[in-house]
Image (cartoon, rainbow, N blue to C red; front, side):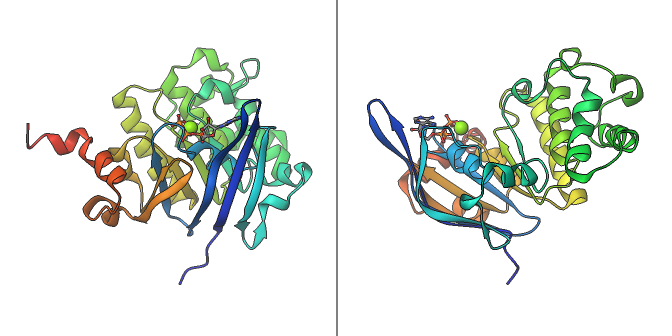
Length: 267
Ligand SMILES: Nc1ncnc2c1ncn2[C@@H]1O[C@H](COP(=O)(O)OP(=O)(O)OP(=O)(O)O)[C@@H](O)[C@H]1O
Ligand SMILES: [Mg+2]
């Protein structure tokens, strides 16, 4: 029995809208052990992003938590005030979004953006944080970091920007990294490189990852366990082998059968 770092129990989230209340998350429970990767899969609108955002305290204003707990080292994150969240977000729990441009500041040098979490959370001096930012740029595979550290986001390609976002997310060595479809905006070769990079850094930084994807091929390569969401509920929850070889729910069957790699032998 390992010590869980995250334990989500019976989470329920509604959204208030003009059309009435939407039950987006209906009694979802899952956990995360140190160093493991949990993949969340499921169709569009099934609640993957809302679930993940709740773990980092970034729910929309019209969201209301109707019940449940999100325990992080035994502390229920749902009870935190914004001030307390600011100590955890980007420090112990970090997030990578799908589109790197939304999380990068176009007016700031990337060196500053990578160094900032260290200065904010760790009280690292500017000079030392700059050195660490350079190291991190090397670790995420940005060529010529000494020159590029002074450049701005628009000077980088999409894949390089996502590497920068990963550098920012991992610089404080968070215990949990949330990745909401971090590679879907990238072309296939770059996708594969970024996934390899994430796996590599996960070992170094010893972070646990919640990885959202539509792609079961990515799940097979990245995850230890899988949660399949459908209409705000967890349809299936188990190891990658459980889900691939013994899916219980017709929805999961459909998902597995629509994987291109599984058609290769039969077409
Ligand atoms: N701010 C909001 N107001 C109202 N409803 C919302 C809001 N945010 C999300 N929802 C609803 O909550 C449900 C879950 O949304 P969520 O973004 O988690 O889906 P998802 O699984 O991440 O989908 P996708 O794969 O398209 O990213 C959807 O029905 C969505 O319409
Ligand atoms: Mg989403």
